Image (tube, rainbow, N blue to C red; front, side, top):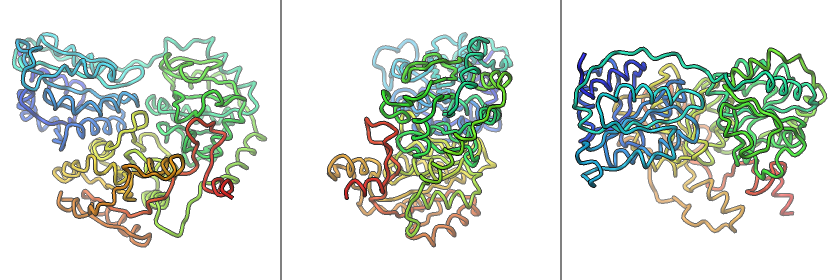
Length: 561
């Protein structure tokens, strides 16, 4: 049948099973929005307050559901406003398809009104991107975009469509998408056998889990793998929930704000097995001194990650779930009772601790965990609150911590929480932000109230840019340059003005009742939780130091004395 470009786009979205799109209209994309209006019973469109919010919402939807997230924007500034969200998805390997419209082909390249080469702009931060100038190529391009976004190592894809293509007509034939094929052709028997032999020889193995284990849905295989090895497990920020955080084998996060048990244990181990993890600088600290006592075995879908940051002794390339299944099949039951007992001693020696007498970020996270029984989806912005959310909420399932790890995007969380709630309506969704992050994209609270999307926004308000201030305190002689935000802004009043239920929390006693009521109300809620401006995230590894030099406030006190 003959359809115009806008109709073809919508039909292709339906082919791919898209049920929700986040976006913002404008002149060049008007034809698409007109067609969306006609299909509003099949595809829900969420009008965000800003295009950046749309890209973060698509990202949050993808992380929460495992499906491809979709966002849309018009040409020029509409398209460029998606860039931060696209880059966020790229650094964390999140499958989204960003659809933009551009000026018509005859006026491309002539500095036309709201014209921008968005394909050129986003080339370094997408898996692939396209500009469609011929309507006969549109359907296959959309299909290809979804295929690229979700296969192998996932990531964002941008499709820029000229306005005349959205109006021109051509023949359309429906195509049912082929099932996604996992990357198995690179998994060789030789590599698997080498991995098995290294594991059998190890006396002190340690498993380090990253976001790839979540993206490949490998939790069941990972659990079997860990039990067979009889090893402790740590994770990166992106890997949280891939392995049950309540399991006795779990030692906490590794790296700059990881637990001492994880950091010291990895330093002592004789075999470090990285499962879907890329050895980020925030994990390794000083790479020259990282896991020096260990052989390194890496499982990853992307060959570019092997030996990029840390030199490996062996690797297996391919889909992580398939790698683990292949290794599990050949791996005998191992026993490392002495090593596991030593790890347990370290966990007892170096527990996570904070002042329980006052209202703090860690207390808030533990109370949220207690009230939600660990079943909520937690989204975060970036900073101290993000680390507390990683340290003090126990993630027992994958896709329950959604956070910007690679790019570290302040302002990510509200949009992501909206996307997560649209994708997982059965879940309580709570965004944790600092006051600095909340200021950046707080306008997305209006998106939540417009559609009555019942997210809970918790602002850990210390009236400063907390993580930057922490560095200024520890490494910059307490020179607080441009980090003080004590300007009398009342977030509760702002939230009420945007149509949300709001609470101001100033002590521990107020917190529990407000949280219980917020969950029960099932409406958009903002909680302004006032905490001290000098609270710090510990443990910490100083920049350039080894993770074996992790320190906390007690270590600092001893050093000062």
